[in-house]
Amino acid sequence: MNLRRMFEDRILTDFTIVCTCSEPGGSGEIKAHSVILAAHSGVLRQQLCQPRATNKLEIHQKLSVMRALVRFMYFGGLAPDDDPTSLSAADMLSVLAEARNLGIEALTEDMVAQVILPKLDPHNCLSILLHPSLSSHSTISREVSAYVGQQLPRLL
Image (cartoon, rainbow, N blue to C red; front, side, top):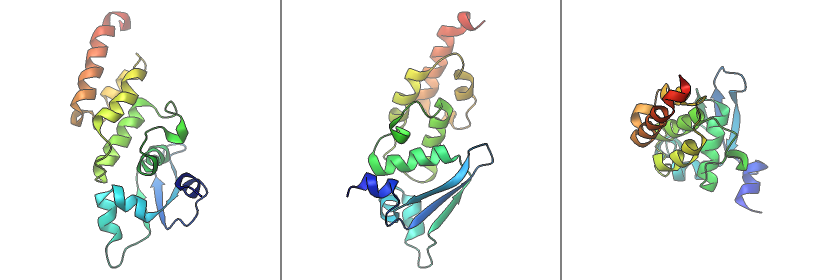
């Protein structure tokens, strides 16, 4: 029995993340192991170590974003369901923003940039540039702005 199977089959899970996003397909639950979450997230560790700790976290975030973040905590990679194309570039920025909110320091801007930047195209640049957390990520902001500058004649 390995960790992947225990996660995917929900074996001995003791914590539930409830996503309450109202977008289509944005709500749902993720069952996880509190020890894995506490090992990676300072915020969750603090919550779980309280004397009257709850075994549930309600969060206003898309299920796909949280699933990618939880999979990162378990397996160290950013590919949700082993498919890096399944999240949009803007959703990847949301993964990074949520990692910051939860105190998950292992997920870096450079790691997210390696997923986002190769997928840049004229169609997704606007959603990236308008993402509320972009100003916090100088590398991604700079690279997306440079891409738009290079593509501007083509976009007009």
